[in-house]
Length: 461
Image (cartoon, rainbow, N blue to C red; front, side, top):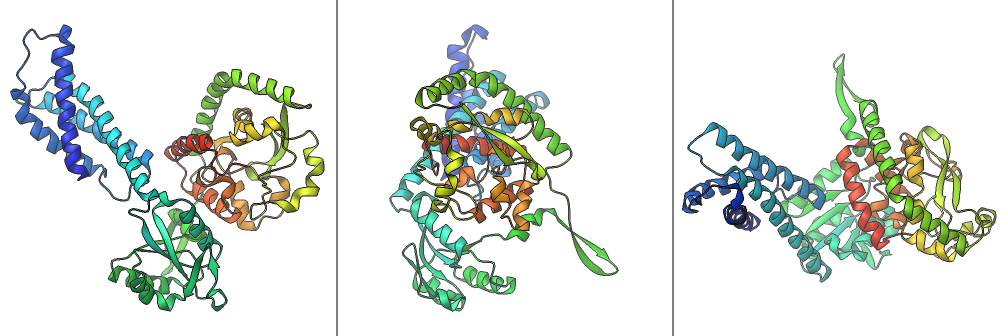
């Protein structure tokens, strides 16, 4: 269906491009307008060619879930297809086509195909919100990860899943209810429950099951045409850095250095300097307005410098617009037991220390803007793990400290994946995934996803 609509839109794009070139841009010549019939036969070839290139670029791959990734693939596909046509013009004289028509078609087709995909995405979200097209999920593992996943699916129908039951091998969990979903048996019941509940997808959300058993369970899923997903453990997250060597006939696995080192680290730092400098210049008027509002609302300093732990465990003063009363840290011990987030992070929705203006600038994440200065000075990055407090780091397990290998960021994977709603362990996993899989493209996607998260204030408190 998508291929057919793409073909129609490609043809419409060239029709508009032809009209724009020979009916509107007449000042560029020629004196006589070529008949569109001269283009018609060639247009069939162009349509098939473009669709083939789209397929080669992976534009019709079902694994593309991120709209930003799809947008980039679309841009690359349309651009390469247009350049290919230019190449034909130079190499084959029998292929006669106006260069300006191709340029116009490149712009128009990208816009139309992008709008078409945006409409499809919004339409799918609307259907999922109404429960149409939502998959029945069976979650294997009733621990913290499984419970968190179920909660996310239940609270956000657009994720496309509806948990119907849990399975868990711990007898103590049988019969337990998590978010209103019951643990109805153990993994030995998987085959029976999949058929009984008409399950469409199984999610393995536990590391307590052996790999051999997971393979057996996956085989059962495949037999019934049921898709499956696995929540990775730390070992699976670092799998991209594993290479296998052989010493005396014994295979040994070697884990290489993290990707965010050497030239990659230099490149990320260069981008941080350039973008932070531009942002400081552009945001100066906003800084001034917010500073005046803070001074008007309450007494005290405009900026608040808080000691945070940066790269390699080094302390630095993280800057924020003050959103709390001047003596907020002095009364922390009185409210620290009221944290609403699991783990070592203190978060509370209705923090009594918050000022009137502070509630608004915190909700809109305006209080974070001065951290751009930290980025420019090299203490932070635009994208990276959340900068922890020293009292949080004191409670870290050794594997938690891996998130201190790189500079902390103003935004990051955890911020665009739930922010304060995520448990601490999930936040650490996201940070480690980011460190292991860093790329400029990943940073770009996170920055793009930060915008709607900030606007909607999802998970912010």
